[in-house]
Amino acid sequence: MGETKKINVKDWINLSSVMIGAVLTILALIWQVPTNGIISASYLLMISFIFFVNSVSTNSKANFEQEHREITEQKLNQWMLFAEYTFGIGFTCVICAFAILGYEYLINFSGVRLLSLLLPVSFIAVALLLMFVYNIINYDGKLSAFKSIKRNLWAILEVGCLLVIIIDYVSRYTTGIPLIP
Image (cartoon, rainbow, N blue to C red; front, side):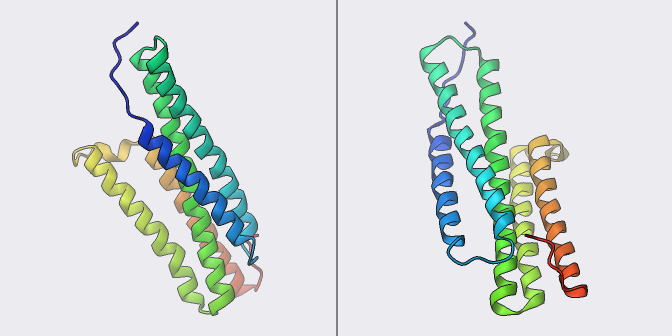
């Protein structure tokens, strides 16, 4: 057996569990007042639920394997990386769902069109800024911060969601047809 260091996954298990509860609560609340975008947001939130459940179970497996079986540090790191990727993708789905819901609810209830578009733009911009700062801190301010595959993937997905919202906005106000279900 390779020598392994003690890992602490309790916080990640707790955080993923809280996210599961938050996602289910959000789903219950948004279904009370249907709006455009509820279908897209529901899909994203249900997918995030699966990713958060996987993060809990993968972190729990890594913890169990470390405490009760012989496991190499390399194998342990693989489990932890898998859990981190799934948590991140789940969180990205939640961010995208919130951006869509905020955009659609503002359009439906306030009638303020430009502010409706500025909400998802600012929301995703703040999320990307925080991710960028985290990367810089994580990589000690080096340019290698841009080499984080997982965070680049999450950023691309969030920017893609924002582009869909912008295309919907343009379509909605040029043809009157919303594109986001």
